[in-house]
Length: 454
Image (cartoon, rainbow, N blue to C red):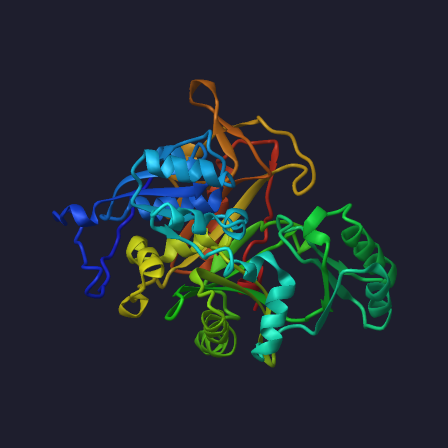
């Protein structure tokens, strides 16, 4: 459910604070629509539903878990831009939170702006930071932002010649959105050339692979860093670390993420400051100077080694599953922070975070990230949710007959937990998983291993 303690933060003059239970006047009573239907959206809805500023919460399309705290509009897809705008108009929505990448890259925020509806998320021009890897690499090169050495190609011949001239392993990336699967780490020249041909021929990722970025393989430890921005000011959030590989020991195919935890020991206060100074602030300034200010959340995927942080890639939205651990740790009201991104005034705002650790473990359908069946029943969720400190976010579920919960995706459940230490949070999450009866699912048993290694 949406029950969570919200600490009211100090706000600027244009965002007067509203204490829980107080009569804040009609001007701050908001009908809010969240676009999307995964675990990230459930976590955002969970945080938004606790805000005294939110009088009515909708989610489109939503899922079975979100339906417990918001009214879900299942027949409007997350990427249906005209449908989402029409829905917001019909429901008299005051504020829209666009959570997924694809609609942002396609221009959904611009469509809401044209309709006169306030929305959170960057414009199509600013969302190129995720929608085009070559755009981001060029921005890094022009602004001395540390990242992997690279070149970009639209033709197979020159790309193959470049691959043969570079050390291995080497990274081949489709330029556009490919649902988290457009990155190939090639261990051999043959693998690299096969990836280049697959992408540039259009067979693998269609238009997303019409241009490829080939870059050096960076060694180090990965971390995820998030910062809210109103196009001018930047408010850093906390760091997190996720697990991309499907199986224990960081083995198996890349996925959208099999778990996450926060804080990440590799990302201390000094590393956060360097990331802000060397990566995030130059990016925000460059986008503003270009006339395409970024308003929303910048998600920097980082590689950290002895020399410091380097940018792996940018995303134009909250991470999934990192959002789940961020929302668990956030003590402040999320809604004023999102509003400040859209309206300006972020410089007046501060956020407070729990010092406790948070972890989320993904339960996925067997077969993910490749093909998998849908429709299996999940039992035991109510018992699992009673474990102290546990919150279960639904990622790919739907309601079945007689109140049953059915799996309806690859990543299905995000079993999340908070505790004073990572060890305790992890123990709570796995205790909850033990109570969930879902033979068709699988999960990694080593989430947060980097934080626990001596």
